[in-house]
Length: 123
Image (cartoon, rainbow, N blue to C red; front, side, top):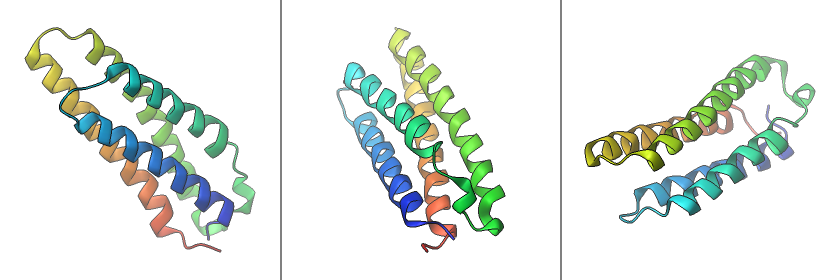
């Protein structure tokens, strides 16, 4: 079972990822704003999510949550690299490929967060 504090933090994290996804879907990309929010998302994950006490988790889901956290951490690092490459891209085709990669990565991150929230009932 997922403790209330965990649920609250994952909900907030999911909202932040959705906000970033909405910014990426806009016609005119505000790369500075996107970078700032990506940094907030990364910091929130490192400070709020990673500091949650996994001893409070039900033993049946501890391994699953830890696996998701590992994947989320990896995807966030790759998202940073993708955004850096997006800012440096000059060719419209490259820019479109980078945008598609970033959007896919955000979908994956939101999915991982959703899986943690949905597969683990609130206690």
